[in-house]
Length: 453
Image 1 (cartoon, one colour):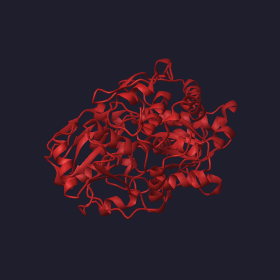
Image 2: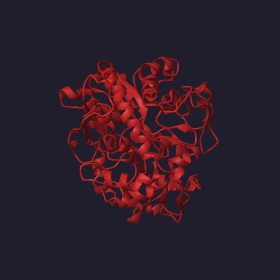
Image 3: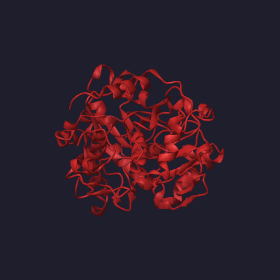
Image 4: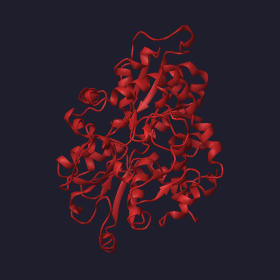
C-alpha cells in the first residue's frame, strides 16, 4: 500500500500538534473527554484461580490503554471483577489515555519504555500503526487485532441552534440548509477526535447518505478530546463526535440534540477493538489467550442487563470515567433522550458486548476489517490499490485464530463461535449494501466519494 494522501498527513499533523478547539455541539461517536495527561489505575493484584500448569501465562503483567467511553467497559470490568486474574493475568495495568494520539504514541513506545502494550482502538488504527501510516517517521509497529470490544453505543449530535432544520436520520432540505450556511460563509463545522477512523466514518456516511458531500459542504475538524467539554458552549462548532455517556449531558444541558444513533445508521455495526503490539503477543501467546478469556467473561457479564447498574457505578469511579453513575444508566439500558422530542427505548440499540441480533460481538470478523479499509479508500485516506492487497494485510493483522483458540479453551458453546471469518453482506440505513466478496461494487454504488471508481 502506498502513502496516505497529503490531506491525511496535514490532518495527522493537526492532531499531533494539537488544535485549539471550540465546540458547542457533540456527535455521539467514539471518544469522551479524558484528562490532559494519561493516568493509570492501580495495578491489579490477585491470585489466579483457574490456570493449569500447561496454561500458565509467560507473564502476569500487561499494560492496556483505554479511553473513558463505553467501549472500554469490558477491559475495566475484566480487571475489576477479577476475570483477568482468574486466568493468571494478576498484574493488569489499565492506563487512561489523554486522547487517541497519546494512545498511538504510547503503543509506539511500548510498556517497556513507559508506554502501553496495547488496548482499546478505533478502526482501522491497528492497521495504520502496523503499516507506519500514523507513526513517527512512518515506523511500522506491527499490531494484532484480538477481539471486538462492542457494538453501537455511538451516534451523532448537532447544536441546538440547528434544531428543526431537517437534521434527522435522513437529512431533509439539505440543499437549503447547507447552501445557506455556505453562502453566509458560515460553513457547517463537524469535529472528531482522530482523523480517518470510526468517528469520521460515521459522520461522513450519515452526511453522504443524504447527498451532503462532507468534503465540499462541511468543514471537518480534528479536535483534542480534552478541550471539547470546556469549549462546547462557545457556539463556533456545529457538531462533534463522542461516545456514551457524554451526549446525555449535551441534551440535558440543552446544548444540542442527537439526530441519529450509529445503531440507526448500521445496526449491530463493529465499533472498537482490543489490539496489542505483535511482539508482545508473539512473546506471550499463553498470556494473550488468558487476556482473551478474561475479556470474554467480562463481555458476557456486561451483556447481562441485570449487571448494568453496577457496571455504571464501576465506570463512574474517579479513576475511570469520573462522572455521576446516573449519566451512564440510561444509555446502558438503550434509553436515549434525543433532545429533539424523539426518544429511544430499546435494549437492542444499547452498547452490546457479547451477542447481538447477528451473533457474536466479541469475535473480530475479517469482513468488518475489510469494510474499514474500503471506507478508507472511499474517502482517499488510503489508495485504491489497498483493496488489491487487503486480504494479505488483514490476514497479517487480524488474529481471529487466537480468539477461536481462547474461546474453545474457555468452553464457549460452539453456537457462539462464528464458523466463518465473514459476517456476510451488511446493509446500511440508506439501503446500500457491502458485500465483502466484492468491495469494489460497494464503492461503485456510492454516489459521493473521492475514489475514482
